Amino acid sequence: MNIHEYQGKEVLRQYGVASPRGFLCHSPQEAEEAALRLGGRTWMLKAQVHAARRGHGDGVKQAWTVPEVRKHAGTLLDGLGARRLLVEERTEIRQACAIGMAVDRDTQRVALTASSQAGVDFEEVAAHAPGAFHTVFIDPVVGLTAGQADGIARRIGIPGKSIPQARTLMQNLYRAFDECDASRAEIDPLVLTGDGRVIALDARFGFDPNALFRQPGIAALRDPGEEDAVEIEASKFGLCYVTLDGDIGTLVNGAGLAMATMDAIRLYGGSPANFLDVGGGATAERVTEAFKLMLRNPKLRAILVHVFGGIMRCDLVAQSVVDAARELDLHVPLVVRLKGRNEALGRSILVASGLRIIGADDMADAATKAVRAARGH
Image 1 (tube, rainbow, N blue to C red):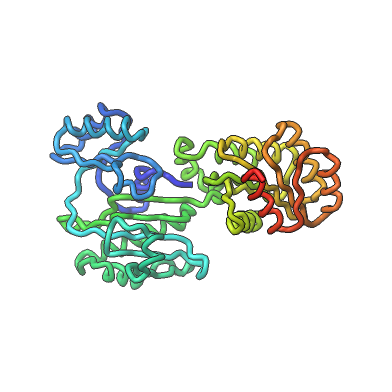
Image 2: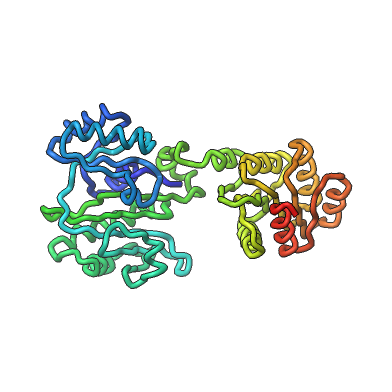
C-alpha cells in the first residue's frame, strides 16, 4: 500500500525526521492562503499523487508571487488532475542526495541504499550502474548502527559537521520502516540546507498489505482514489488481482504458479492481462467475481484458468468454472488446465458441460492454446 508525500512526511515527523513547513490544499484559494500563512517570498507546490519521479513531469512547481501560487495551483489541480497539493516553504539547498530502504530477500534484511545524487530511479540505476549506490544491510536485532549510518553519510558526501544529523535521520527512518511494517521507503531528495540542517524534502513509503491488520494508523492513510478500482473490488472477495496491459486473462491458485503461468504466456508470444491468485478457496462465487473483473478489461481476448489441486479439488474448481461461465454467458475463449487432486473428474465435468472450453494437458500446452485463442485461431 502506497501513501502520499504529505502523509509520508507526517510519518517521518512522528519519528523525529525534519521536513519543510507546508500545508495540504484542495483549491487555488487554499493554496494562496497557505502561502500567506507560510510567509516568505518563494513557495513550492507539489501535486499529491501516487506517481514515481513526479518532479520529472509537471507535478512540482515553484512560485515567486502569491498570484503565481494561485495560477500554479489551478494548473496542478485542474490541468494535471491532482485532487490535492502540498504548498511548502522553499528550502535553500546546498547539497542534495537520496536514500532508500527496502527488504532484501537474499540477505533477509532491510537494505539501506544511498546515492550522492538526487532524483535517481533506484531500481533503474541499481540495474545499470550499481557502483553509483552505497548499501548496508541492517541486522534486525541490532538495528542501524552509528558506524553504518556514518559510513553511508561520508560516502554520499555529507560534511563532517552534519554527519551526526544524518546519522540520527537514518536511524529514525529505519525505526519508522521497522515499526510501521514498511516494504519501501525513499527520501529523494535528502538535502543539506544553507544553514547546515539535514532534512527530508520528499518522502515515499510503501507498506506491507499483509501487516495492515496491526497498523490501523497506517491503514487509515489509504487513498482508494489513487488505486485501480478493479483491484479494490477484487480485495473485497479475497482475490489478489493486479491489472496488466495484455489481453489474456489469468485465473490461477497460488502466487508462484500465477507468476509461472504469466511467464509461459510471454514465452509463447502472448501478453497477460492480469495477475489473479484465487488462493485456496475457488468457490463458484469467487470464480464468478474473478471472471467479472477480467471481463471489465476491453482488451481481453482469452482467459486461461490454471489450477493445481492440492488442498483444492479440481472437480470443485471445474464445477465453479462451468457455473461462472453459464451465469455470465461467457463468450471469450476459455482455456482450462487442471492438475492434481480429482483432475480426471474435473476434466469430465468440463467436457460434460457442453460449453466451449479448451482443455490443456500441461503448462506449455495451456499457454500455447491461450495465445492462439487470443489471436483468433
